[in-house]
Length: 410
Image (cartoon, rainbow, N blue to C red; front, side):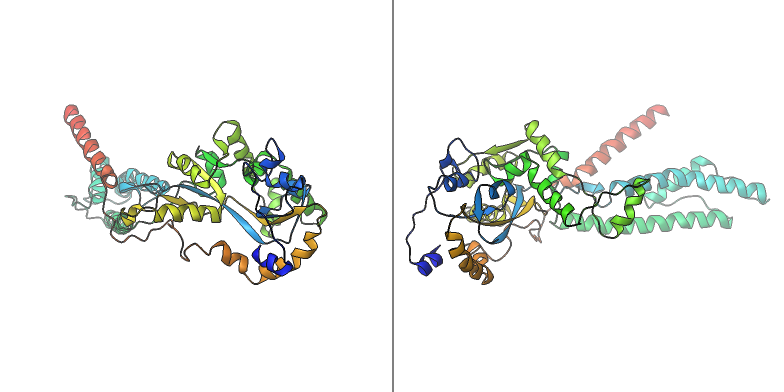
């Protein structure tokens, strides 16, 4: 605004909406759009998303930037990937390992039985019980008193030993990396995760987030435009499989996240709050809610929270973290009343300011150049916590209980 003031030699007063809404409210003074429509302001020098509902009521300047709305949550103590002894492998790998342990013993018994029927020699059938105990002892890298003489049985034994050596090597390496590195993943990565994992989330009342989630007209407008320019087609096919050729050529079949987000409003998992300051959202985030706000606002909140902790350990200063994927992205611009002559005067100057990169510089001029409280804190001295070893305690309890049960059976 200072550049425009010096360029056109005018003075201005700053008027803020009473409730800090973009659109909505009981009276016109509650929102920016309301102030423009009532001619109480001549221009909205704020980054407003150029939504269809807004375009019907105001006139926008040139697009000044792409607004990115992100999800901020309280930094979890544990990684979403899991913790303890099971963390190095995913569920599928553990199921396959369990299947291998349970089936390889019967395989040894089966092959020795078939060999005994086909080849007459001194080596008999290896019973199921010794086969099982061999597999079990080799799984724990223990020895065995079995000494097969047949080459077939020897190859089976070597195969299982090699399998266990490789499995143990991968497991040990992954476990070491998991327990010593601080890198972890979040349970919330996409908007749909909010619904599927039953999280609560909050956003500003009267904001573009509330408008988009509560109405579907915005997306329908763009989808209709794609029909007109030939980017959308409706195909008559004999089978759904026939769509795959189009998808392979670059077409997209995507779900609708807005359906899930709208459902969360109905079940009370989403709330739109009217606050005096963005800092007031932090109480909700500390109680487990996810905050959806513009990237720049989130960065300021996290930076101010970080710098306010003077006498806190460095590893404990980052209270909050941002999900890796954006909630939404929209083009943003300044706004004028419909028919305003200021648009033709200011837009050429705003174009030059935009092309010079001044806006991007000013938006982050009071923020550090490095990423604020990233997901990976790059800590090199992570100490093992009791939660990392909880599985070892469970193994001891389960083993002792099994020994008691076996003793009672004997």
